[in-house]
Image (cartoon, rainbow, N blue to C red; front, side, top):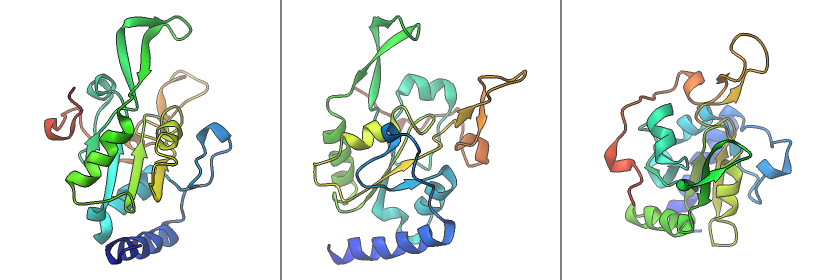
Length: 194
């Protein structure tokens, strides 16, 4: 571990100890080999700490989804793990099919390099709910030399309400529901463009 990485790790450790990291997800599908999990507030604190410039915060949602659900300029870049495919239909979910971004890992590696970072530095991944794409996107980085990959367990929009008049609305936890900065205005410089 180089000096820069060690300093970032010490700063990260102090933040993690002061905010108590998110618990390990119950489902193995949401777990990663690193075992590093934060909630949206913890991710925000990490990125806004003195060591925030030595980490890469990636929004792994599809750009079309971001356009309709919102975006936070706190992230460094949008690199979708799954991309919508308007040429195929998902009959089970009654939506367009989603294809895995075969260049995801290479694009994350490039984003690190573009910022003068390396695979030794912290990478934080955030999807919509913390489950469907958070851990799978992290698993796409496993075995590729990354040392510290965190998953935001409550995601950008959080979980759905299970009962009542707002059933299925995403109003439980998540970045938006934690009153963290976000907007429907997208930052073109951070958005994924093919």
